[in-house]
Image (cartoon, rainbow, N blue to C red; front, side, top):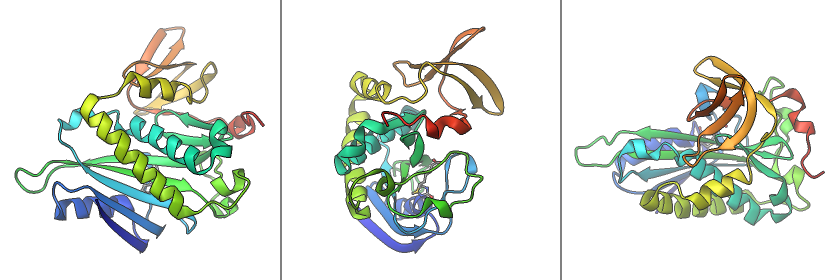
Length: 257
Ligand code: BTN
C-alpha cells in the first residue's frame, strides 16, 4: 500500500482524495503529524494538534458505492479493535456513540469521517476515503470550550506513554482487514454484535437529530443493517443517518470508574 506522510498538512482526507485521483485503483494511506484544516462530520472543524493519530485511507470501491453506506460503522469497530490492542487497559471503557464517535470513559477520544470521491478517469473505480482522528497525547485543555462533546486522550486515560505511530499502524492494519471483509461479505452479523456490545447510551432517553429534525426517545440499539433504533410514543424507528446529541453530564457517567 502506498503511504504518504506529511509533517504539516491541511487535511489528510483532502490529500487522500487528491492522491487517489493521481493513483487510481491503488490503496493510499495518508498520515500527518499535524493538520491545519482538519475536517469533522457535518462540516465541522476537527482540532488536530501534534500528538494525535491523524490518518486517511483511500480505498478503491470495487462494489456499487451505495453498498458502502455502513463503512463508517466498520471503521468504528476497526478503531475500537486498534485502540484496544495498543492500550488494552482502556479497552473496557471504550464505547461507540452511533454512528462512529469513539468515547473513552464517556469522553470523545476518536472520530471518523467517511467520504466518497468519484473516479476521475474513465474505468477507474470510485474511492472511499476513511479519515480517522485519535487523540493520543496532547493537552485537551487547549481545545475551545464550545466543543460539542468533552474530549480526552489515550495518554490521559492510560497508565503509560502511548506512541502516536503505534496507534496509526494499528488503526491502518485493522481498517484494511475489516474493509476487506466488508467488501467481500457486507456487514457481518459478527461485526454488528461487536458494535452492539460497545454501543453508548443504550436504554437511556436521548435526543437524535437528522437533517434538522430532532426526535427524542429511548435508544434501543442497532438493527442488523447497523441502523440506530429509537423508541418513543410514536413507536420504534430505525435511522440510517443522523446524530445522537450528547448531554453535558455524559462525560461524568464514567463507565466502570
Ligand atoms: C468527527 O468526529 O467529526 C470526525 C473527525 C474526523 C477527523 C479525521 S483526522 C484525519 C482525517 N482528516 C480530516 O480532515 N478529518 C479526518
